Image 1 (spheres, rainbow, N blue to C red):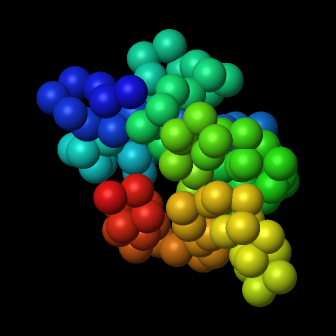
Image 2: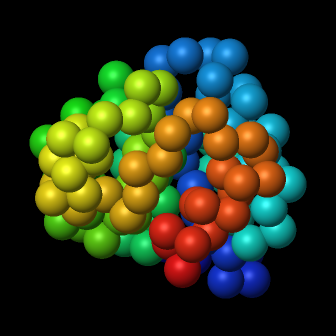
Length: 114
């Protein structure tokens, strides 16, 4: 769903509280993204974006999200070519190394979901 003034709704799906806080802080800096007010990450709608990690979002879950029209950006702590291919085959919009700093991460997310 498009949020206020056509901005993309972004859900952060991770069990790591520190990573979640860091990602939310970065995403709040992007005026084209809106975060769900209630923090609900369980039920993204078509046109929403999910940002998650390989440990929190296996390829099968990516496929479930993308069949419903959700864009998925996967963050990889240890990027691997074979894993990247599997996630891309499952429909992930991007497979991004977690080494990306805040600016480059936002840039890569923007490019992946535009």
